[in-house]
Image 1 (cartoon, rainbow, N blue to C red):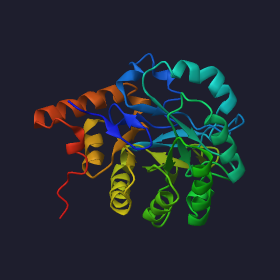
Image 2: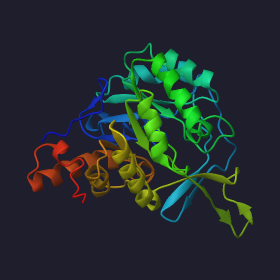
Image 3: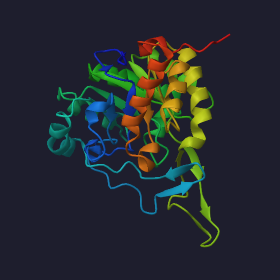
Length: 304
C-alpha cells in the first residue's frame, strides 16, 4: 500500500496524516501514546521569536461537539525550541513542520530567518489566522494586501517549504488562497478555528477570560469541508484539510474532495492515539477497496 504524498519543495510525507499545531505541543508529548514515526508529520506549537506567556485563564472550555480556546499563542520561543526540543524531535523519523507567527511583518521574517538555518526543520506553517491575540496573526489573514506582502517577503526569506494557514473568518477564503499561490506559497492549510463564545448561566460569566476564542472540533467539519473544496478548485498548490477530523472516515472525506493531506486537531485531546489509528484506518479502507495508491483516492469524487 502506497500512502506517501508529495506537498512540493522537498516535502514528501510517508502518509497524509499530520498533527495540527496547538494540539500536540512540540510533538514529544505524544511519545507515550505511539511512535511519531507512524504519522506523516507534526505541525509544532506556534513559535514566535521570543517566548510568550499567552492569555490569562480560563482560556479553554468544552462545548457541544467541540471546544473554544483562547490560549494566546503561549510558547517557549524559537531559541529555546531549537536548543531543547528540535534535537529530540529530529530523531523521531517524521516530518517537522514548524508553525510560526509574529505580531508584525518584521517579527514573522525574523523567526523564519532564524529557524531556516536548521536543516532538521522540513518546512514552515505560517499562522496568519489565529483569532486569539489582539494584534498580528489574524490581521494578516483577513486583509488580502497584508497577506500578499507577508507571503512575498517570507518567500524571499527561506528556501524551505512554506505552508500558509488560512482563516475561515473571512468573506471569501479562496481570495486568500489565490494570493498565497501567487506569491510563492508551496501549500495552504485550512481551516483554522471559527470565532466563538460560551457563557455560564450559573456564574453569569463568560466561560473564557477574553470572552471570545477559537471554536474547533467535530461541529466545524462541514464548514471546513466546504472551504477546502472551494480552495482545491481555486488553486493548483496542495491544500491540507483541517477541521473536525476525528477518525479515518473524516480524513478520507477531505482527501476525496482533493485535500492532499489532513491535520488532526481537537481530536488529539480526547483520543491522543487517533493519529496512528487514522493512518491504519485509511490503509485498511483503501486495501479493502482494492486501491493500491492513496493518490488514486485523492480528488476522485464524482464532481459533475
